[in-house]
Image (cartoon, rainbow, N blue to C red; front, top):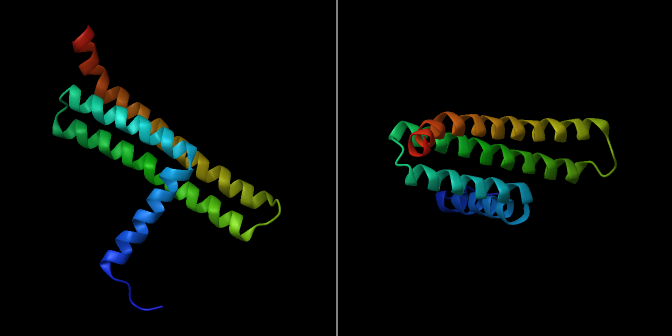
Length: 121
Protein backbone atom coordinates (compact mmCIF):
# COMPACT_ATOMS: atom_id res chain seq x y z
CA UNK A 1 0.00 0.00 0.00
CA UNK A 2 1.57 3.24 -1.15
CA UNK A 3 1.54 6.67 0.34
CA UNK A 4 -1.92 8.24 0.34
CA UNK A 5 -2.65 11.73 -0.87
CA UNK A 6 -4.39 14.41 1.13
CA UNK A 7 -7.32 14.19 -1.27
CA UNK A 8 -7.62 10.42 -0.77
CA UNK A 9 -7.67 10.89 3.00
CA UNK A 10 -10.53 13.39 2.70
CA UNK A 11 -12.37 11.12 0.25
CA UNK A 12 -12.14 8.19 2.67
CA UNK A 13 -13.25 10.34 5.61
CA UNK A 14 -16.21 11.53 3.55
CA UNK A 15 -17.09 7.93 2.69
CA UNK A 16 -17.14 7.08 6.40
CA UNK A 17 -19.35 10.04 7.18
CA UNK A 18 -21.72 9.20 4.31
CA UNK A 19 -21.93 5.60 5.56
CA UNK A 20 -22.82 6.70 9.09
CA UNK A 21 -25.34 9.33 8.01
CA UNK A 22 -26.83 7.03 5.39
CA UNK A 23 -27.17 3.82 7.39
CA UNK A 24 -27.35 4.63 11.09
CA UNK A 25 -30.79 5.58 12.42
CA UNK A 26 -29.39 7.24 15.54
CA UNK A 27 -26.96 9.30 13.47
CA UNK A 28 -29.93 10.65 11.49
CA UNK A 29 -31.68 11.54 14.76
CA UNK A 30 -28.55 13.27 16.09
CA UNK A 31 -28.13 15.15 12.81
CA UNK A 32 -31.75 16.34 12.91
CA UNK A 33 -31.29 17.54 16.51
CA UNK A 34 -28.04 19.26 15.48
CA UNK A 35 -29.79 21.10 12.64
CA UNK A 36 -32.53 22.25 15.02
CA UNK A 37 -29.98 23.43 17.60
CA UNK A 38 -27.90 25.29 15.01
CA UNK A 39 -30.99 26.88 13.46
CA UNK A 40 -32.14 27.99 16.91
CA UNK A 41 -28.67 29.43 17.57
CA UNK A 42 -28.96 31.46 14.38
CA UNK A 43 -32.54 32.62 15.06
CA UNK A 44 -31.72 33.61 18.64
CA UNK A 45 -28.54 35.39 17.49
CA UNK A 46 -26.29 33.64 20.01
CA UNK A 47 -22.90 35.20 20.61
CA UNK A 48 -19.67 33.56 19.40
CA UNK A 49 -18.97 31.72 22.66
CA UNK A 50 -22.49 30.34 22.84
CA UNK A 51 -22.32 29.18 19.23
CA UNK A 52 -18.94 27.56 19.93
CA UNK A 53 -20.44 25.67 22.89
CA UNK A 54 -23.35 24.44 20.76
CA UNK A 55 -21.06 23.41 17.89
CA UNK A 56 -18.76 21.58 20.31
CA UNK A 57 -21.66 19.73 21.94
CA UNK A 58 -23.10 18.77 18.54
CA UNK A 59 -19.71 17.64 17.26
CA UNK A 60 -19.08 15.54 20.36
CA UNK A 61 -22.34 13.65 19.85
CA UNK A 62 -21.67 13.04 16.15
CA UNK A 63 -18.08 11.91 16.78
CA UNK A 64 -19.06 9.50 19.55
CA UNK A 65 -21.81 8.06 17.37
CA UNK A 66 -19.28 7.52 14.59
CA UNK A 67 -16.86 5.79 16.98
CA UNK A 68 -19.74 3.68 18.26
CA UNK A 69 -20.57 2.62 14.71
CA UNK A 70 -16.91 1.85 13.95
CA UNK A 71 -16.63 -0.29 17.08
CA UNK A 72 -19.86 -2.14 16.33
CA UNK A 73 -18.76 -2.89 12.76
CA UNK A 74 -15.33 -4.04 13.94
CA UNK A 75 -16.89 -6.34 16.53
CA UNK A 76 -19.27 -7.74 13.92
CA UNK A 77 -16.32 -8.43 11.63
CA UNK A 78 -14.32 -10.43 14.18
CA UNK A 79 -16.99 -11.91 16.46
CA UNK A 80 -19.38 -14.20 14.59
CA UNK A 81 -21.06 -15.66 17.68
CA UNK A 82 -22.24 -14.06 20.89
CA UNK A 83 -19.44 -13.13 23.24
CA UNK A 84 -20.09 -11.29 26.50
CA UNK A 85 -16.98 -9.10 26.15
CA UNK A 86 -18.02 -8.00 22.66
CA UNK A 87 -21.45 -7.15 24.06
CA UNK A 88 -19.81 -5.21 26.90
CA UNK A 89 -17.67 -3.24 24.43
CA UNK A 90 -20.76 -2.35 22.40
CA UNK A 91 -22.62 -1.29 25.55
CA UNK A 92 -19.72 0.90 26.67
CA UNK A 93 -19.55 2.60 23.26
CA UNK A 94 -23.31 3.19 23.32
CA UNK A 95 -22.92 4.59 26.85
CA UNK A 96 -20.33 7.05 25.54
CA UNK A 97 -22.87 8.29 23.00
CA UNK A 98 -25.43 8.67 25.78
CA UNK A 99 -22.99 10.72 27.88
CA UNK A 100 -22.26 12.97 24.89
CA UNK A 101 -25.99 13.36 24.18
CA UNK A 102 -26.72 14.26 27.82
CA UNK A 103 -23.86 16.77 27.66
CA UNK A 104 -25.47 18.28 24.56
CA UNK A 105 -28.84 18.54 26.33
CA UNK A 106 -27.24 20.20 29.36
CA UNK A 107 -25.25 22.56 27.14
CA UNK A 108 -28.39 23.38 25.18
CA UNK A 109 -30.26 24.15 28.38
CA UNK A 110 -27.57 26.47 29.74
CA UNK A 111 -27.09 28.24 26.41
CA UNK A 112 -30.66 28.48 25.13
CA UNK A 113 -32.72 28.86 28.32
CA UNK A 114 -31.74 32.46 29.10
CA UNK A 115 -32.54 33.51 25.52
CA UNK A 116 -35.86 31.66 25.49
CA UNK A 117 -36.81 33.04 28.91
CA UNK A 118 -36.12 36.57 27.70
CA UNK A 119 -38.08 35.92 24.51
CA UNK A 120 -41.14 34.36 26.16
CA UNK A 121 -40.65 35.50 29.66
